[in-house]
Image (cartoon, rainbow, N blue to C red; front, side, top):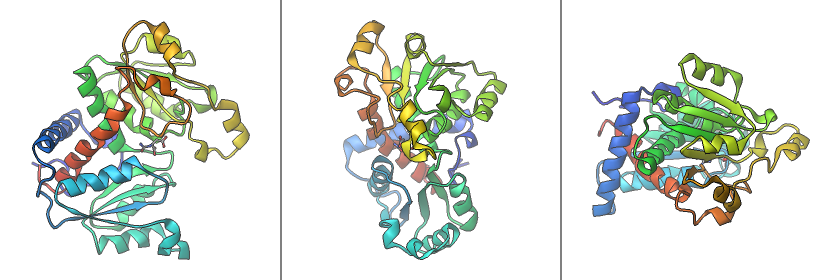
Length: 309
Ligand code: NCD
């Protein structure tokens, strides 16, 4: 039974452990196939629409690349200003329109819950590429794919998530997946940007060991993976609060030298100042490999949504 056929992808909590393992396996098959040829014809004739109401580089382009590598086509709403959204069209109406032209929608929108709203309005699958400070499930899947490749296993993982855990939608989705694999999770953030309480209690309720701290060095010493995040400036209602927390946690070569062990470093990107460029040459710096993995994981998700895997 194809697990994602015809389904929306909205939230990190919608997957079972088995689902995640299947998705990662399919992604790895596509990674191997792309070594042999540039593109496949699995989704020939299908059309993906990307609808981005917020800035994006990796997510939109890797979805578009994934669809084209699978032999499908892509249509894309240009900027919000150049579409009827500028005339006041609602998200539901925009989604209904796009559903007349495409077979799957990838949506990014600043409003929490927007992906679910769009999904409820249309009969075709909607993939959440970020709903405000909510969720970003496809990023979380490519994050665990990267961890699996870099570490070799998702079992008995200790991981530090550092930075903006309040507004960061990538970490909100990632902890859902990590909880399926029983990870120990250090949450490192300024007090102002702690992981929402309902997420933390949800993790603890599942028996996950969660340690909240502001001591990045202590957390990283105990971890094999370090997941850095950007402070989400655009989500602050009070910019003076942003000024207070910006630059809170910075990873640089000196920090890694003090650590005296190798660690795998991930970041969903874009980075601002939280990872110094002197870290880029470090062997465990996996964030550029991580963004390449986005193509394979998104190929897997698209193929599976169309019931082709
Ligand atoms: C993230 C996002 O948009 O939530 N970027 C991404 O999709 N790779 C993280 C961020 O913007 O900081």
